[in-house]
Amino acid sequence: MKLVSRGNAISSSDFYKKKMRARLRLFFVFISTIILLAVALVFLLRLDKFQIKGVEISDASSRVSEMKEKVIDDISGHYFWLIPRTNSFLYPRGRIEDDLLEAFPQVKEVTVSLSGIDSLEVKVVERRPVALYCQSDPCYFLDESGLIFSLAPSFSDDVYFIFSDEKTGDHLRREFLPAEKFQEVRMFVAKLESLSLSPRSLGLGEVTSEILLPSGARIIFRHGGDLGILFSDLASFLESEEVRGDRNFWSNLQTLDLSTPGKVFYKFK
Image (cartoon, rainbow, N blue to C red; front, side, top):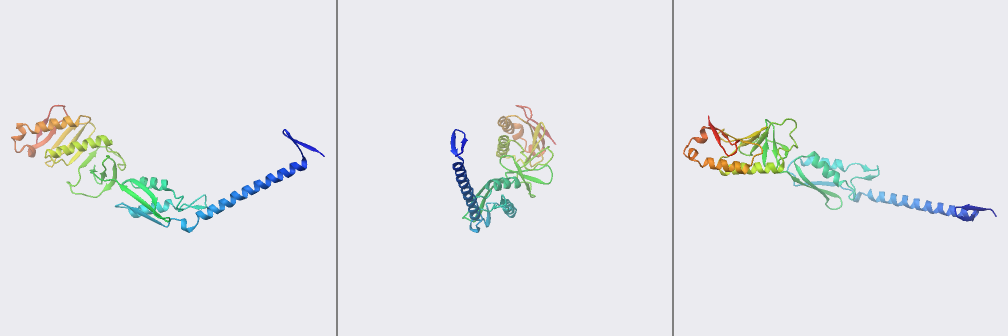
């Protein structure tokens, strides 16, 4: 009988052949089982009852049909040419959320979830316009963070406060000001309203900003200054006798310059 050495073990050639055949059978059974399980899984994932058949967009005030089309497009097709993206357990939720946020600037948040086993519910949180951004037509909506997010229809002058600057290029999705600074400026404008000045717009220049009043008068102030101190200086000036004693002060006013700290300069028309 011939002996065959395999490493540290010694066995007969017949025994070795039987051992290899047994291993091959086990390997074949293992592979066959994996393939059968994979086929069974694909079959189950392709069952009609596990497919998304409807898409509902909720809490969106505009472009609902476009959003729905975008979602349907995202769940079209297959994974690896086998498993439908419409499968209720494997639909691309992250992709849907990212694509909606990218395609629709007015959308602030998106939440995608199943409604039952065969329906998809997409909840949308839209940005709330608080002001307009205008250089010329068209104007855009600004949200509370200072983001220019959507084209705006035509409004009468007193519906929204208007911001502007001298920047060029595509304005959509651009930050007018950093969120914290934008909130500070809005608070300053609101304080001006408490003084019955009724500001209409604010133009942001390279060095100074100008606030336009209904009479056509302009309030000028420098960037980067403390708006709280600026307001105090303005309020003190408006309480002065030269202003309170002149009934035609605002109708005659052309500019009110607050760009020099602690001082107020004004010019009549």
